[in-house]
Amino acid sequence: MRGHPGVNDSRDRFQHVLDRLSTKAVDDYYNPYRLLEWPDSLPDDMWWMSPELTTTHGTAVAAGLSEAQLRALSKYESLNFYSLNVHGIRDLLIEVTRRIHTSGYEEPSRFFHHFIGEENEHMWFFAEFCLRYGGRIYRQQPAGERAAPQRKETESLLVFVRILVFEELVDHFNSLMARDTRLHDTVRAINRIHHQDESRHIAFGRELVGLLFEDVRRTADEGELDAVAAYVRRYMTYSFESLYNPRVYRDAGLDDPLGVRRKLLDSPERAELERSVFHRTRTYLERTGLLR
Amino acid sequence: MTVNDGIDVVRNWILSRHPERARIGPDEDLVRTRLVDSLSFVELVYVIENATGAEIDFDTIDLKDFQSLSAIQRAFFTTA
Ligand SMILES: [Fe+2]
Ligand SMILES: [Fe+2]
Image 1 (cartoon, rainbow over the protein chains, first blue to last red):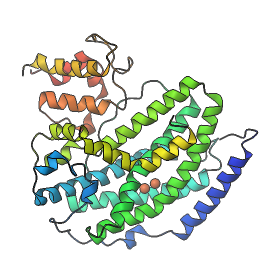
Image 2: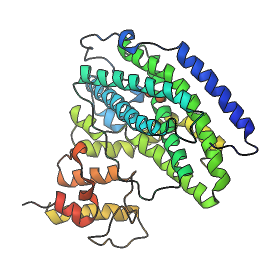
Image 3: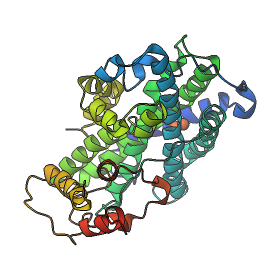
Image 4: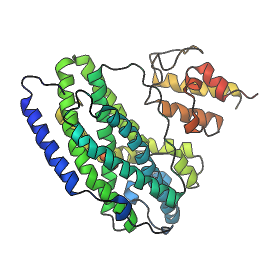
């Protein structure tokens, strides 16, 4: 993020984007604690999640289940989806809070204020939904230690790539579920509101990742760029696979939840879902040159 | 399944992801040697759950229990 000759155009562009998104964040500001309506309970026999977005859709596993079982499963899958949001937000808040108003982040810091404030509110309504209608937030699936520390530029790039990948993954679901008339109004409202805020976060994230990648590209050799691309590819798969939570299959009453997860991960339908979820993200990352 | 079979399943799973390796020493550090990394760790946990048939509480995981095959054996496949 430091000034380099020849990058004034992209820095001007970044300033403009920051102005536009910050103004929009102020204009669109709402009180989530007042805005949302929370019925005491939601009917159990509805689709809690668009069936096409569930991990079993069209698979051999789904073929062995009744529609009532599939609807029940969609409830637990939706709870897992919102739980992933809660944990993903906690992780990204830690990273962004660690960087706000530190050197190198002078410009994005003014947008970080909107980002941090909005994410706290998102975490609240996702957690509220899980606790109120599911009685639980699914635990975060475990992540191991990161082996070798990266140099600072690469570390920062990967932090914001991880945030962007997470936000784009979630947004694919939000934008479709906001419009799905089979879903309850409360479910649609949460997805719609989140989608509205996330369009700004994603626009911001893409600009920031673009700039951070320029910094890395200027100073990295081919081997390092290959390693970054390979890591990001694996990270996308890892994020996608977190949708396949064996505790969900257990709670929905399926036998051998780990076997179900494995079967689903190996199914052709999974490849198709992963492709469609990350279609935009992959196109963007290829265009920047980050995925190669 | 005997307790020894369980750790064999774990070892075979790691080896299947690392065709360049023929064996793994019982005390080899799985993280430092990059046999398991931050992104494959979740799979390792599920492989262990599958082999033991018991769920692991993610919120109380101690990473030291996953540091080597012998640590995994001690933490998850010892019945005493
Ligand atoms: Fe959010
Ligand atoms: Fe966001």
